[in-house]
Length: 193
Image (tube, rainbow, N blue to C red; front, side, top):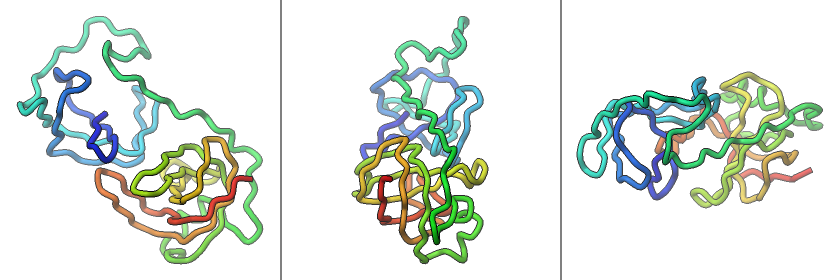
């Protein structure tokens, strides 16, 4: 995980000598949004894949893989990884006059700039980034890649809240540092039910 000073982003690179607190530069990278790591059994909003990293101003030194590995255990010195808790999505109903998360993705081009209403549960919440709260909302519809709706709002929520979201659909939003969304709802009114 790399702290850019504005955001914390994840990078994947060949095994190298690096420790917590080192200054790193990730170059020649390719961002992959919505990445699922089978090895870690974890979803990432975005991961930068690279073959070139500079550590404290010099090219990273290759490291040998540890000879002993305990399944599911992070290497010594690795900062703790906060796992997103599982949220039960059963029983969520489409709101009167509203649409589902899958509908937003399926009709994003025709919905661009239009106001929609969606009901779902908060599966991830990041507060006060770029002056907004960033809320991931799912309602049990859709599949990987079109089932997690990004919502920006001034409203404060927490993981597990059932929310009614009303706002304008935006498409192909790129905020830099690998934060890209094909569709999202911006500046939404969010009511916790």
